Length: 275
Image (cartoon, rainbow, N blue to C red; front, side):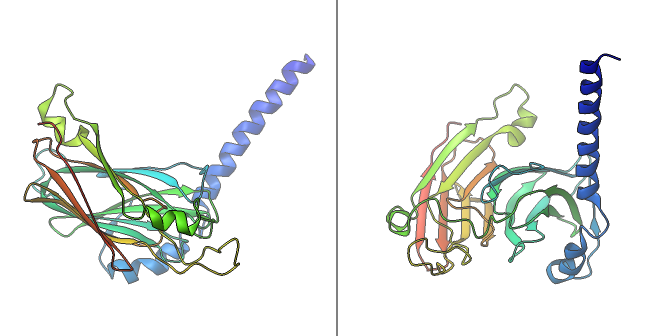
């Protein structure tokens, strides 16, 4: 056999072996041990449907930046099912404060899409748990290889970060006009970004070598006209400059955002999307 062909065969075999190791690491026994002890604290004894087809969660297998791990969640109730989506909880098992954020949705939402960025402190499952109007819980999870996200130094110095704290950007990233009006709610998205260092309490000031006290966005409320889109309660696992992309009904009504942080600051923003 030609030497080049042998080398190519070995490289292919090595690649498949690496994929097998990755898959094994994501599913190895005990990898979700933290979740088994955490679950009763968050949801009590309520049953949770795991690997539910109602919940789709996209996250990288290996994160480029552990302090800003992108995730994208879709929850969709099938046609003919009378239930609606009421709540979504994001959890990072191995983080010091595992519950990253909890979203409560207004209206009778049959489907929602939501994307954000999370800190991941160690190799961990990220979980998206949806609560439906009948109280049932549906979950999907992804194992993400990342570490040090909660203690990674802030990208900006404290003086610069606090100078612009609370500034908001709201923009339509997809207006949902893709031909089928029944899909508009799923396709139409707005992106919200809030300037905030979202200090975790585990980051060290590189000059003083002292830990920076925790200071983060803990409340967000989004309304469209008088109708609630969602409220959010957040923790230290949301990334610096929290960014949330969410689905909405493209009615043309003004979108208004009220937010606050753990120091009691209040922030506001609004957007008038085209109808």
